[in-house]
Length: 418
Image 1 (cartoon, rainbow, N blue to C red):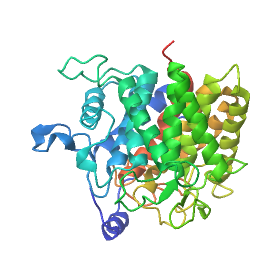
Image 2: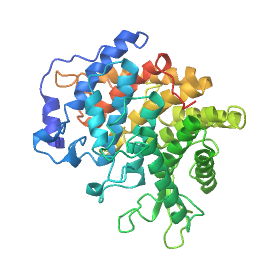
Image 3: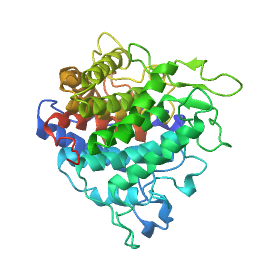
Image 4: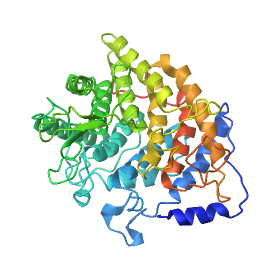
């Protein structure tokens, strides 16, 4: 649902009744009601429920392209998995299952032929993370294919494992440069094939670490450790746990010219993986991993919160938000920081007080920004008074995920196979 800047400016100039989302961050019923309200804003952008609308089967589950790429559709359904689990509202369960089922791909690993021009390692990872979350939450299953193969090819574990193995093979193939690490793109002809970045490697690390925690299978743990050692060794994660974007591997660069840009979703995927490793290694290296999680939370609190003295603990995308230069992807990044901070705190209780403080302030600020157009349209800059005049799917998703994250401490625990 594309809207030009001129359209946004015109809408902002009109007079609307300002009614923000009501939210008491200390009241579970209020949080649930606010989250339920916010789901409607996200789904106002969605039309591809099923093929009865005249769309192709592979289009089910996708939000409008352009401006919303395939990866963001996957990220949104991950937010809705959490919404159902945290609120107990099953209204959207079939929509979630239909969306994911349509995107598993012919090899059941979330490689979708129709997305050949848009799917990179990081894009795929956001769909795979849905299978991992569903596994941890014992979410209702996808229907099995009619071929009768066992185990079911669409079981959450099979989907996640298939993708994990594909990431691992690509990692080996990509290791001719930079002494390891996944490339951003896995298709040689795509722009970005000569770049290795934190979101692709962090997505792999997140998947591997959480599968290790869930299954106890050492292979997953070994790969998570390998991904961590490479990321820190190459300098993408600093000693004080700031996460840099990536570096090129072509023309002899060998990942030496690092782009120090910091995005909240990079920190998000790495902190969650580290939390899973802390929980999985409770009797071994768990303390070291716990300290890493604590380091990530501290780094996030200084990098992505408190943009001004009068906006203490309010989340912002520091690289672009104040200047108003965030692109469509970046407008959704705060959603994943909220999601994975709240889940990390479930696994590493020592960070729970700090995470709660950050997310409560941010959720309250996000809710008050949702006063646009008379229909609870949410803004980008949560530290201004009310709606800031911006419109988009990312704005709706970030508010939803930040609000619903407040339910995590009292919600279901992240399960294991044991």
